[in-house]
Image 1: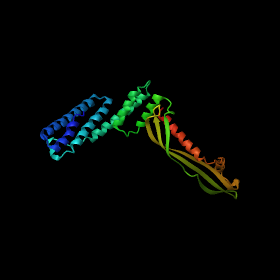
Image 2: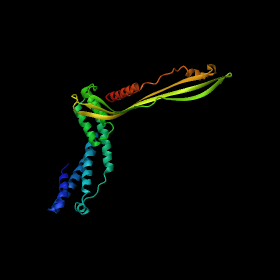
Image 3: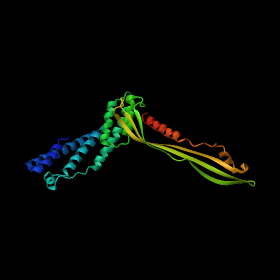
Image 4: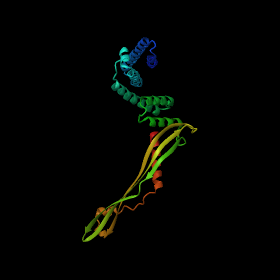
Length: 278
């Protein structure tokens, strides 16, 4: 599939030296059109099969067609004309093939990892194929993590938490006060809404069992939130409504410490990781 690259790359050099240019142009044009035709025929053959596993190769073939077309587009107009070059617009076909290849590979990797006695080498190969199709696929790291867990079991010794930033908000006590009256008695009721949050940012790193090589890393941002509501009164309790009396049963709770909030955020991060490898 890559035989067209050599004549196209060499053409740029030979054009500069004007050495036997006509023959070089002819050979390059033949290689270009033959490669496109071969890819097109293979794509049609794959699509006619109706098999779901065709899309990674279909995507690769479309990438080859687009890649060589983009290379040819950089040549001067007279060179493109001599090669019978026609710009190709296959973006829609390319995007469709990418989407279907991603869907197939994601499903196949999940099926492989969730099976009994999974073939982890095959799963890792499929993950690499998925990276080639779209390195920004949102599920790649989760699939790598699951494969790592299947291969090594307990990941606690392989996992390292690198914290780049942590911050805790000030204690907030937002209040709303109002008066209640009953039989000439008056009371001021205050509802307190306590809130506080802590956030940790950084990356989780997983190394090989010897700790010498990072096999997986991804960023994280986790927040721990504290929220609590209680009610206080000033005045005659006998003026309180039934609803206020019910709220008064809620005891006062102190704000959690900064350390406990940070530790809770770390605990949540561990829960997220454990959920990913189930």
